[in-house]
Length: 512
Ligand code: G3P
Image 1 (cartoon, helix red, strand yellow):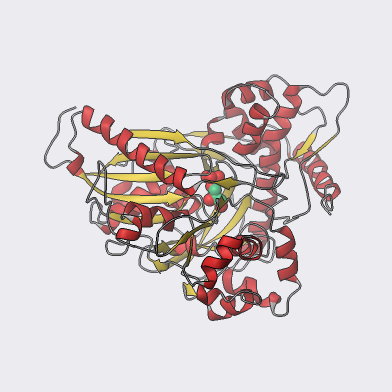
Image 2 (cartoon, rainbow, N blue to C red; image 1 turned 30 degrees about the vertical axis):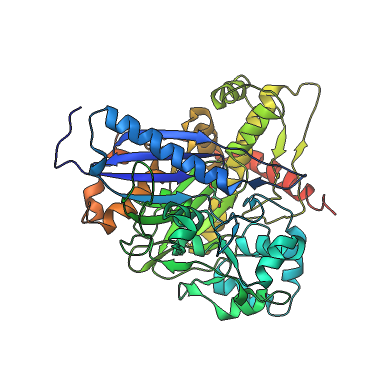
């Protein structure tokens, strides 16, 4: 393909829990070039999950270089890439020294459960009943702040840096923005509202850090002594700086969204009432509730969906284990060497043979929030095969999605008639059919599943006028999809769900 001076492209860094990608989109929202890299998952002890933030940054640089090389070898000019957006795994905490830019401690990943007892302690503190109304999140090991409190209590270098008032704390988006801008030599320290709303330190209603939340969490360490990133709009030409080095040197960073928010944007979920479910490492259902936050009374989170000028909010159902369950079967049990092989195995049996696998590797998230649950299989017999285990692993995500849909309907008083899906596991026809059967709703899968990366590109492109309005983006993810209709009756579906719910009740209290 030849280069044309009028060509315009937008790049997107998609920094997920298990891999990093850089994708380049054209004005129609089609992918023109991409590069992907996996990085190390560190599990130092049961329940602990860490990343090396420097390795993550290196993987981002490699992906940019790799994709730009392909882009150029197809005859495009890299100068035609007008902006880049960042989308990222949320909640994961990165700590560094604000003066030197050097990291302190590995990043603690959102799935890590070492802070379960801190969450319990917080729940028992005076004033805890008001916290969810302010920030939208329940006490659990999931948000950034519990990870921060653990580090302050348990890591000496973190504590010394805190005492010297040199501790910088951010989520992965702010770490990447900081590093891409040149780190300590040109410090740009910023996050967007969707990421900040996962820390538990931001007031959802004002979209700014809350004095009340800071006070509540400062019972042992004064959080005011810590440097936190400035909260910016998700689509913004001024706040995020530009790339300091490498193939895209000088390219502005103009969009930033937590990955689940980006998927909602990439799915064009701009209207209140739109919803999407992304099956990635975990699985996350976001339901657009419009310009006013809805605080859940049924186990969901309230979050900023995106802030493109004024904030738009979502109700969220978060499932900790989805694709990571499939990876677990491959890596820990040797069940196959690809996710396709696991789907094939799951398809080799007619049903799970009565097996229920509660994949509570990080406790159970929404809508249950059981932090002392661990992964448990119920109903094993001599008949149980690898196929049944593989199938029960897929079913676990689908059952949790059904429970979340139920909670969402109770919170919003509206029935969700269908569900739009994306993410790696959504590529499995079998898994999506199981989802349709279990949820008793049609499941719509678009042809283009890279909606997360597209969402961040949209945020960046809107800020720089690549697109003037969202209607220009119709196309890529809207044509040629597949709809999965329920193939079993309601009674059968309800029976299997009742068995799942019984299993959930029985896996409580496993951890002391
Ligand atoms: O909240 C965690 C979430 O952002 C991780 O997303 O795509 O890595 O499962 P993913």
